[in-house]
Length: 104
Image 1: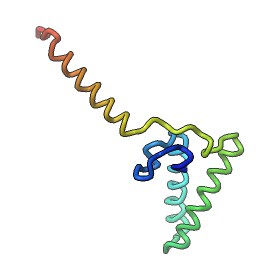
Image 2: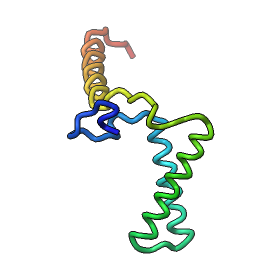
Image 3: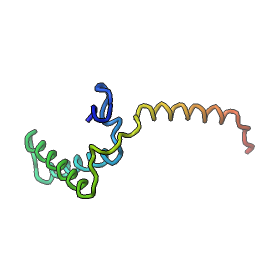
Image 4: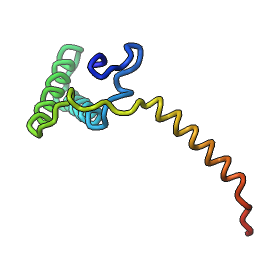
């Protein structure tokens, strides 16, 4: 997946996933959490089997709606967005300091 999206191998894939993919992965994980408790699953094998099946189910649902996760474009690099946000916050601080003080 990293190769297809052109992501450096030392960077986490999640930093570039579209929000739809992240939401789908979260749904599969929450389904697993719910079923681990509800079905009293114990041990790595049954929990892994449950998680894989939930991922398959979510993927099937997306496919029925015409969505193929591997064909979605990568999202903007989260680290790049964090740097931009920090820069913007500093600019806002600078501007705010120049504003006249309000009278009480």
